[in-house]
Length: 310
Ligand code: 13P
Ligand code: SF4
Image (cartoon, rainbow, N blue to C red; front, side, top):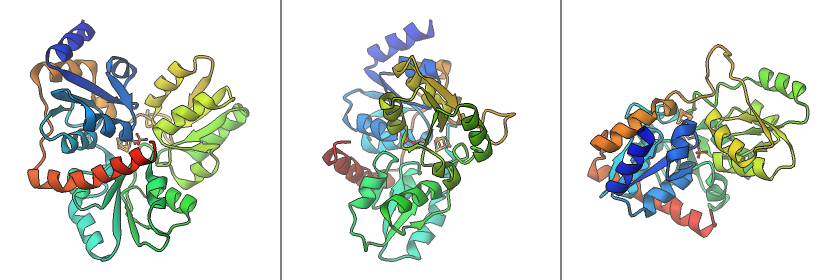
């Protein structure tokens, strides 16, 4: 019932449903488009819909609203926050930036609009390496807020960017010990990992990449089994694309909880999606001055990504 009603409402209201791969399978399946953070921003920038329903977390809704300020942007549950964005309060980040004059500020998209407003260029995990590479080797760069992604980008680009000490609670939870136990059990399996994970996990991985890169890699690889060290929602798309392959979610440290599921992402449900389309709330609102500043580094990212064919 909900499904048909969601369908009817989105047609009637000229609404588009965008979903991140960390949403539950039912939401991914009903969405008009499913993507990683970069793809969601690209869609939000080009859609002609009047309403964007962003099934993801708050900063994703904000990014859509920053890019399309005249559209109504809804998120099924406004409490869907992000521990990584929360680990970088705008006032503290402003102090950090002020302490380093002459530095270019690169911010991961997992930040609040206020942090984006004091950023020179935004990146996602799909384009971070290429965008960092586009700066001269001697450039002084600040990278925030994810220390794990920052460390990883430093290691593959030979940079020494100054890092903000933030992290995602989901990606930091994975246990090296348990992943190695799993690998012993499935010796043929490839370990595929998101760069928000800690360095020891990255070191034992066969492939490291953004959500979209992990999906692409598992489809192209000859291997039949994969240990997946990222939010387990991504496995829905991996299974759809590769019915003959096996995907084993990497276990979190504490096996009594589902820590490889992002509790914020999972706040969105089909019922809340239906209600938000019906009542056209909760809506993302952004201060005009912040929006006008924050749109510049996001547009820069989109322009470079387009040039790079991403
Ligand atoms: P990507 O979608 O860019 O891979 O980011 C992962 C993530 O943690 C989203 O919150
Ligand atoms: Fe934020 Fe981590 Fe959840 Fe992504 S998985 S939305 S980075 S808390």
